[in-house]
Image 1 (cartoon, rainbow, N blue to C red):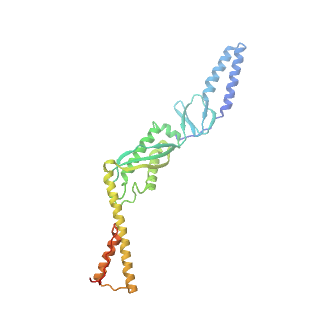
Image 2: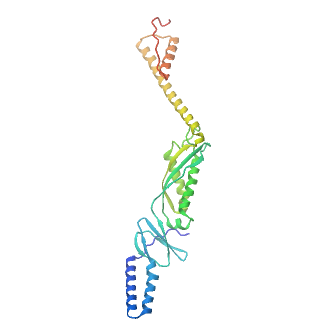
Image 3: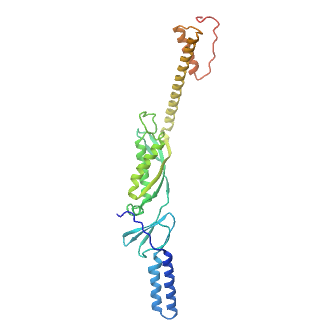
Length: 285
């Protein structure tokens, strides 16, 4: 199949003016009694001039074929005259938005998820779009769905179950979008279509596991918070012991240090306020 060939046909205003002249001459011939000449001129005008007039709107094109052979594509907007026997097919060059439906698929570790994408695309090669595929809009819809499914199967939803994952669907939005855009461009290049942008518009666990995975996420968040609290508490206890030792405020043996560390950790790591007990005796009573 030929690749796109852009052509610039002659202006349609000159052809339209010629049509008016031919029709005027035909009318004069009919008026003075030269019916055959007038009729022939009128028929020639309507057969060879009028059908060749085409209007191309901004961001549109006309794909021309003559007796089954691709002639070229008119991309420049305006009023033109082309071969009247050509078949003219309008192809929009505007950007299209595809709001994909929600798909239920499994991620790379087998969890059922719901995913959808928004894709912005436009035609860059009108000849390929018209002749390489049966219906380029349907082709975009089907290939986009296949690309989104393949993307979902390639990465985990998050790294709760796969901590070695460097890219996740939830955490690596930018990288995932770039990978989706790249795959779509490879799939749609055959149809002369360029993907301008591709973004995940919906991402969630499937309803049957959503509650369980929410509990897992909450548990993970609690563990992470506790880990941070413990690390901070240990640092504060270490600082307190060092300060007491440097200032010679009190000398503590190992047993009392252990008791103090235990008390401080309980105070700092507890999720409830504590009620201190004041010891009015010695350290050992």
